[in-house]
Image (tube, rainbow, N blue to C red; front, side, top):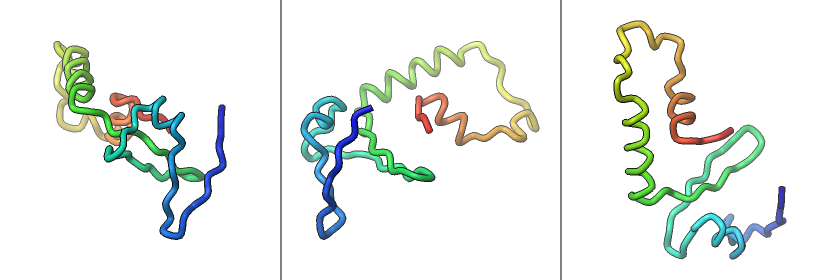
Length: 91
């Protein structure tokens, strides 16, 4: 894994190096998501509309034919973990 040390500016700002911006499709004026973790901050690019629609279509195909959950079946299921798994969010 590659790591780069960055300086934090007076307003708490950092500059994401060009090599990372290009590799992850982060464009000027674009948005990123910052996720706090127990011992880290994760910076992710916000997926564009086409990517999001593609993932929704794939999820819909995967779920097609699956029977809907009945009352009480989801007790104890973490919907947050389910969402993270479906959308490929890793911890």
